[in-house]
Amino acid sequence: RLTNYTLSPEDLEIPSSSLSSIMGGDATQNARIARSVLEGKEYSGPRHDVVVLNAAAAIVCADLAETLSEGVKLARESLRSGAALAKLEGLITLSQKFHGAAKPKAANAKSTSRKAIKPAGKAKVAAKRR
Image 1 (tube, one colour):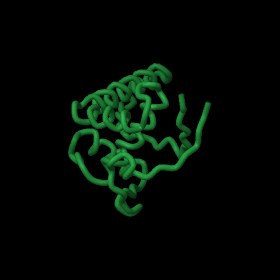
Image 2 (cartoon, helix red, strand yellow):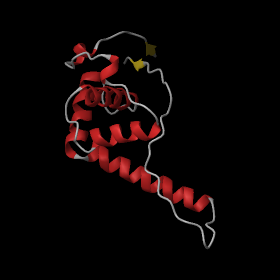
Image 3 (cartoon, helix red, strand yellow):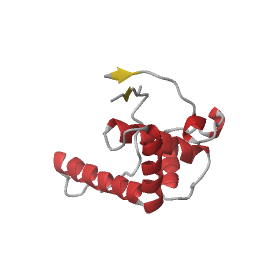
Image 4 (cartoon, one colour):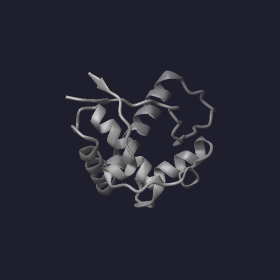
């Protein structure tokens, strides 16, 4: 069963921020911002808060937490412990392995490594109510 509701960041003990404080840019800039948060260079502030809120929603949707508040706690711990960064690195390695397996390399072709995170686009999240 899906339930739609509205909440504010303050409901999860996260301060509201202006849109300009979380604005990104192109895919390369957005990847740098995401990596900065995951590496702990932005341990607080609006961009960190957005990562925490999005991760909390994903954690709830994956049934790893029952509430967004619980998801926020798990997201913060994942960032603090380095587990989120380790998962990103693992996904990059896996995607590069599959990308390499999908296309045979020419003998004289240059190898390139891409670490940019492509934006997934806009998503609408609905919370499950038990």
